Amino acid sequence: MTAISDYFRTALLIDDRVEPDYRALEELDSDRAGAPDDEPEPGLETPPEEDETPVRPSSLVSAFLNEDVVCSVVEPSAESSDIVGMAQRGARIADLLILDWLLFGNASATVDAIREISEQNKSRLRAIVVFTGAHSLSDVAGRLVEDVGFEGDDFVLRRGNTVVMVFGKPGPPLTGGEDRRQPSSDYRDLPRMIRDDLEMVFKGLMPEFAFRGINALRESVPRILATFNSDLDRAALVHRALLAEPADAGSQFVRLLASDLEQALHDERVGEVWDFESVRSHVADTPLGGSPDQLAGRLTSNQRVPDDLKARDDIDLCRGAIVNGLVKIGMTDREVSRAVRDLAAAVGAANSSNESLAVLMSSSSLGETPPRLELGIVLRSADGRYWLCIQPLCDSVRLEEARAFPMLPLALRPAGPAAMIRTPEGDTIPIGFESSPHRLVMPEFSPTHDGAVIADGDPLNWHFTSDDGAQYRAITRLRPEVAAQAAHGLASAASRAGADVSEWMRRGAPDAPVVDNADGDIGS
Image (cartoon, rainbow, N blue to C red; front, top):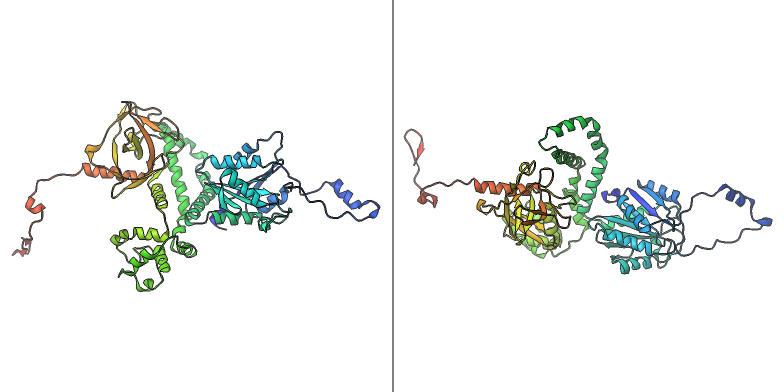
């Protein structure tokens, strides 16, 4: 089991036909009595109608529990249940949502539920299983493709970050060899079949890294809850009461909790996903997505690259460079910079992929909570210019009156960008920091809440309004270390000292002879 499949630990099944795994005593007694006149019982029972196959909850729950997944089963009623709403709540709570296809004889509720789930919170991962007694799984998948806009091969479909997997219930005959998507009557192999699909859908180093990280945080929850216990309440109240702005305690304790979560990631060695052996295994099993020719030619012609590496064919040569790193195989920093395009072409990394990672490493979302104007907030003024707020955190709080907020202009698409951001319109823009002090602007803002300048609007359009009526739209938040670079650049520019020196010397004086003094001192 990998970190990907280990993530899915809770499941919820919604089905209108749930039958117990046991039979009532009176039914058993009737069976023991035999048929009238001791005649043999009739032949096989009539097979169920389309998608009338029931779910037996005890067997299903046991099958999932054997794979360390807790599964709940809900049987809605036609009269009182809001199927779509129930499915939406289930998708928010459970890691895996399992839906019957024909609920009360109609697929409309299931289709509507899947559509709503895929359209809401598109930035969130959702995993759904359609578990059906229909005789054609292809028809089920085709309906989702045509009516909802899913894409994919066979019975694993995707729309944005929502994944749907189609499986048949035990019993009903399936057409066209689809029985490979049908578990045994005791459901024992259903969890494994679902996990196989999930492993295929989310295969990759970055998903493995992210899933391993989330699993590590989940495992650390009991320890963290034991650390942040009620014994600390009195000390926390004392700390809060002593602060000039008591509300600041909230953000301070958030950072405290975040540091504990970060330590949990280190303790579980989440970063080992990017170690040599892990990357080597991934690269060996994954075809290069692009053309290795240019990179291989550059490596072969480089005298510092080891001969045993250059003796490989182009694909293995490029794989070796990717796994070891270009510097580690002998290339200089200047040579590495020149090889960037060739490396990206060999890996098959489109610009959109590189840009997305650059944005992720440079900035973070503003989130659902109104942001505070402080160091790192990127703004756009009405004239389309971009600005970086560089007000220190301690000067952004405990405000009792209007205060000037220094803003550094951002250069768009410079030759050597310091960061990359994504606009609300979805465009990625490389940015640089214009650090000359004379380019700063200092608009004044009055505190709006709890002694701070808090944005107005909603997550789609957070904005700040200065005291002179100018509106600045909040675009993103630079990561702290990136914002600190901008502040450091400004401080360095402001602290430059000019000196009057000989121009002959400054512009490159000719070498003067060096002689030894009689007393041993060296002079000229």
